[in-house]
Length: 167
Image 1 (cartoon, rainbow, N blue to C red):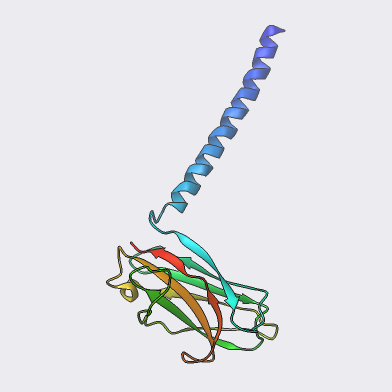
Image 2 (spheres, rainbow, N blue to C red; image 1 turned 180 degrees about the vertical axis):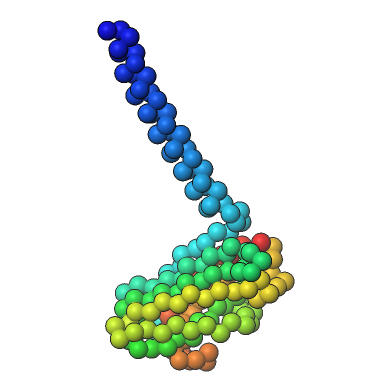
């Protein structure tokens, strides 16, 4: 009987050891994926309406893989915004990092986002490494704005100031 109990406990211990090993491997894989960019991985920055613009929710998901083909990815999303509207995406870059005060530097991107009949829209923008030339190693502040219709249109939505560390 003692031998039977030992075998039963041994089986439970073996299963527990395998489960623990699997959890450790999964956690190691997740940590490796998250730390791919050791300086700045990503940021989720909320859009806020300017004036009386309608908005249930909106955000920029800013991701920096800093690769040789793709330096940055931004996903801009609006939910419950003005229906059937085109927006020009305008990033305001502040150097040195200064809580988004002062005069922003020009940043040559021309991306847009369009909403559907109920005011929902999303767009994925990508930046090649040459778009950020000369900025590597800097800490910058960014505020994104969505302007109605064109680059000189009125501001409909904007984010708070976000700190971005470039590497």
